[in-house]
Length: 350
Image 1 (cartoon, rainbow, N blue to C red):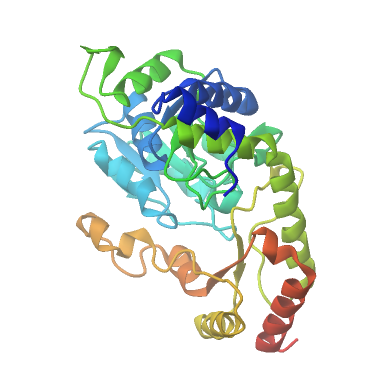
Image 2: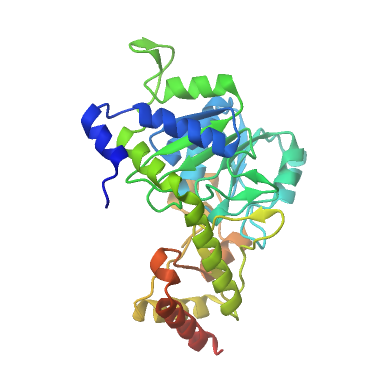
């Protein structure tokens, strides 16, 4: 890793936590997403919890989300004490907005945590008409655009993760919430700093979820050149789409959705074919991964909800047939691409 001047300055001033770099990052992310407020915190998981809490989600409330996502999304809802309701996905792997829209007719629904999965988006036009609070899990979507609006700006609050695996990743765990609600932002800022509004002045119980200055410095360095990162990912996504036949490409670019492609997923016709492709790519030394091996409603952590196999069939099928292809700089090298296309071509009989 190259030690930048920003990171060197942190070692010089030794203001390790919530230093000027953190405030600079908050300002730049708020401006980038065109939101009034940005609140830095310790992780993307904490960002989700802080946003839900600040929006009044607590015991007695009901919140919907997708079972086809990373566990932190659903865990944040349970952490508030609210009732968690899963909604199946559509063909694009995103939460089915039509089902979200019909849930208030079946039961009282107070909020939804939408997931901008793999850097793309659900149907926010339909979801926004539901009259509920929308907390946008944009952990995988920094820089993506929906109908001209940046990821993070499509709900009452937008939540980012800066985990190293994300397109805008730092050097460890870090997160941020963006919102136009000044009161909610003030509450989140206090809660993630032990409930303090001033040092040793506690307004409520709080968390230790503060961003380190080193993390902010590393993220700022990447943000300086982030347009080039997005260009690389979108270019590589086009190459995959144009050169891999015999699979379904669920994440599409278009006039409404302009994804950031945190990963590039392809869907195979059968679980057996997915496993053959995974084994062949791995044998050839090419990176691939399953996102996600199991839907959340079948995981032990959510067993108390009482779901069984078959309750959310599209999410279950996606887990059996999806495979993620590499999106790093090495993946775009011609020899790497040729090998990947050849391996998949042989598996798919092309």
